[in-house]
Image (tube, rainbow, N blue to C red; front, side):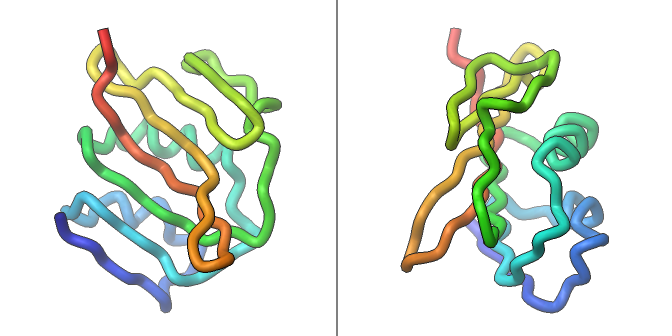
Length: 112
């Protein structure tokens, strides 16, 4: 699996990161400007393949249980799963590593 570290990309170009042809993308910049709902809409619109995973450093956690979206399958404070077509699920979850908080976004196969 490939991993790309991106540290100098202006945050407003996040949607352009979807053109990267690798399965694992890890940003090293933090931004207070991204909105989880916008990331959900972009991920559903851009349709990343199963196995693609983005890790975005974040300054604070949003309560993912409050997100209302027609594709929601399951949600809690730190994790939300959304249907992406008939074959895949998008998982947004907060993870901790080295005393840093990340919003991890991953496309996984839909279990039957």
